[in-house]
Length: 242
Image (cartoon, rainbow, N blue to C red; front, side, top):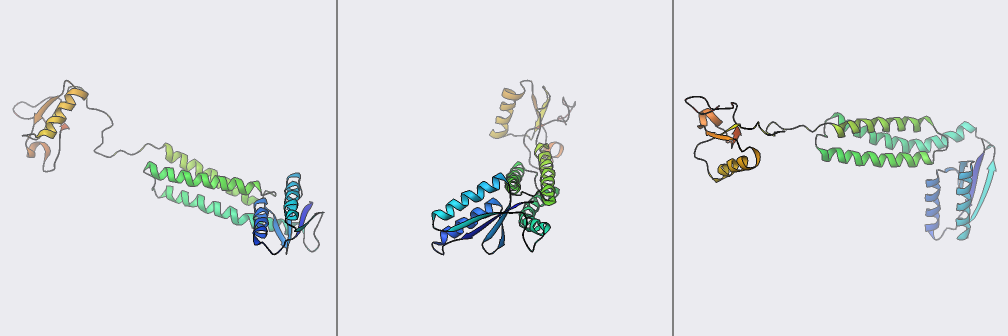
């Protein structure tokens, strides 16, 4: 395999030039070989990146030399590859850690609310962007990249299942209106709020609804309750409906 070796000499001041060059080399995926020598696999894309950086370095009176080499004395090709795998491996591990944290939250059932799922979706989308960035500068396609991609896809599949899962409804919430003509039960001596409730039911929900009164013991028990649907469709003879 052929390699590109960039040798640089940067002026000590201003320091922003040195920091800028270092950041650009990091974004390219270049690996420091020794001192001020940086290496990338040879390809049209990487050659263009190094040539562009050379022009920038020379623009602020630095020095840069680009060398095409077949091998590096004192290092085998596998040792050079390991430099790249080590550099990208740290970044892949950060993405894997984020995916596993999302899976742990899904396993702990912390996403019963839609807001929690939305937060996890935002985090997973951010991990996807980071993974795309890493693989975009990972020129050697190591196993760690494929493993991380598989883990991300597994996490995305689990999260999609959580997003499409029906929301649990509480015991007091109704998913539909009672049948037409139902009898509604409330405590005796209603005040304005329960009178208004009966008016609203007759006007908007069920014009054929009927209403009955039950004392605390037989109807609502000791707990406070408003209008509620009777368990029977019509009253019993000799007493209030149940």
